[in-house]
Structure formats: structure tokens, C-alpha cells
Image 1: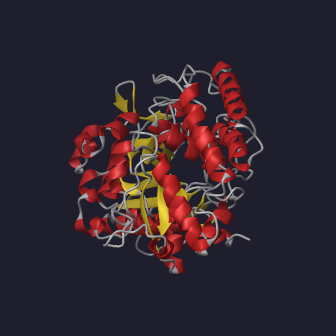
Image 2: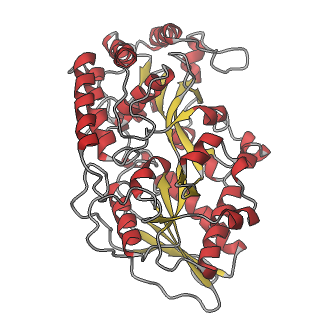
Length: 472
């Protein structure tokens, strides 16, 4: 039995009711609205329906203030952290009437954002997973940022990792400003690893070099507990863990799934099979829990039953709150390169027919302020994308959140295509094939063949946005 729903990942947790909060003098708390759900349609893209560009009911603007609407998809611990940041921004900017709305994570959120942008009736600022940018019609569903306005707020391109910043560009313009990166990492139980002789003199995990060395560490952890040495998500109706694990290890071989323009399948069979054989061996030899859905993996690790946990870093708050003796590090380079699958929460400007003036200035002010103050956001495990914050002593003192920060230079986002990225149905479909490798229901070779066939079908399917996905 897994933990209660509160222990589900804040980045991909259960759907949340939409909530709108007006912060500022005289108004506190949240005003609940009905859940906002998507229309049936573009399932493969994870964006369903563009038939009606509906928006939330308008709210009145406080006298003498500039209205700035902000949509996001953060629930759980991330939602608490985001609300605190928005409240702090409101106190620091009494002239801006910020109206923050939380929408249901995943398809419902992206449906609503797409409809609003298509109708030109969008909020001033929204949140987008960076991996979704290509399929989100930069230039048509999104407006570009004014880099001069951001610079006036202390934010410039050279303050970000080059690869992450470039991923936010399209057609020579900047459509997404990264707030963070949230990679797959390696959690480890310090008591189990100490018993297994895997810690150094400072209580940190000894370096692991290569696939064989990792197997040795898992065997030592298994000997210490009598249970599999590691857990990771291997199954579930919406599981993405098997994809994240494959993507991490496959990227370490130097292989990629799609061409740089996202139009051709270029997966390297030999490299992919090497990784899939390794994944099958981990569960087949009892080194990793074979059948575990997401809540189950959290419960197993939180119960001290395994030495290691492969997952996104966002569960740090769960284990800190439970008092589990644990720490975190970046996933070792098992197949050559020290890369890890990741995504980036980013700020975007949903398309408005007449984006200009003080509301647009307020949007840029908000984005720049949030980046400069993102050390509080990092408490939830995400690595700040804004370079000065990663050097801030307040961030460096966060343990274990700052321990894996160097991976920001080695993160790998899904290859850019209209159907890829976080919260996309395609990502869940691909994870389903790799799930079979981990649970033993598919051979590595059969799973790879199914993945390639599915990707070919997606590549031959016209962009459901009808060509809107290309930058203007």
C-alpha cells in the first residue's frame, strides 16, 4: 500500500481544482472555482480541443492598479511554494494587482492555455514545460519576450545555461524563460548505505563509476536490507518513470531518439538495446523492485526498505517531512556521459491580440522578480535556472537540494516535436512499452520495435495544430 495522495509528486500529481487568488491589501486567501477540464481532441499532443477560447471569469481590478493575470499548474508542495512567492511579489509591488490561477496539472492545463492563446484572451503570464514549446505554436499561441525589459529587471541570457536558454528560442525570438530544471536524480538512504559500506568519511555516497559499479552498489544495499537495492516507477496507467529511466540511460550513450528538427527517427538500435537489456537485468535479478506504481515507490523508499530510489527530485519534501535518513545525488554516469532526463518549468507570454502597455510591463517585471527570488522555489528540489541564485549562499546551504546542482549542465529534455514533452500522451505511451521491459512482460527487442513503430506513426501524423506549431 502506497502513501496517501498527498505524497504524490507535486510536478505530476493528481488533478487539482482550479483556484484563483487575488493577493494584496484587503484580499487574502483563495477563492475556489469549478474544475477546468479539457475538451476531447488532440490526445496525442496532450492538448485537447481548440474550439472555444474560453477564459476564467474576469475579476475586477483594484483602483489605481495594473491587472496582471498569472496561470500555473503547481499543486502540492510546489503550489505552497508558488503561492508564497506570489504573495511576496504582491507585497513588493503594490501597484500591480496580480491574479494567480492554479489549473489542473497536465492535459486540462495545456488545453486551457492553448484555447486562451488561440482566442487572444489569455493571461499576461503562464507556465509551460520547456519540452512543450515546439508543439505550442510559438509566435501564434505564445508571444515573444522583450529582452530589454527583462534586462531592466536584472535578467539577461548569459545568466542561464546556454542549452536551456536556447531551448526557449524559436525563429530568433525568446518565447520561454526557464525558471528551473527538474531532473531525474538518485535518492539514497544514508542508514542503509552506511550499513552496506557505500558511504565515505563525510557520510556521502561514494562515487559510482559505470554500470557494473552500480550493480555492485545495489547488491550491497540488497544484502543490508534483504530487499531489492533500488526502487523506481515501473508500472501504472499514467506512468512516465520507465520513459525517464530509459531516456536518462540512453542519453548517456550519446544516442538520441529524434533528429534535431524533430522530423526523423534516429534511434540507435544497438545503444537502445544495451540500455534496455540493463534495465531488464536490474528487475530480473532482483536488484530493483519489479512491480511498483508511483505511490508504491515513494512508500517503499520512505519505509526504509531500499537503499536507492530513482526519481525526479521533487519528492525531497516528502522525505524531509517524514524524517527519513536520506540524501540525494545526480545519477551516476553508467553508460559514458553523466546526463539525466529532465524538463524545465518556464514562464511564457500566452498570445494576446494587443499585448502592450503596463500589463505587459508588469508581466516582464513579474518574471524577472520570480527568477531573482527563486531560492525559495528551490526548496522543493528544483534546480534554479537563474545563475546568480545557484551561487547564492542561501541556496548552497539547502541540503540536500543543492547537492546535485551541477547536473544542470547535463540535463536532457525530450527531443523537440509537436507530440513530445511533459504531460504529453506520447510520453506515457512510450513509457508503457518500456514498462513491459521492467516488469518482464516484453523483451527488450520487442519493446524497442513497438516504440519505433509508435514514433513512426506520430511522425507521419500532421501537427494537430494545423501548422500553428511553426514560429511565424
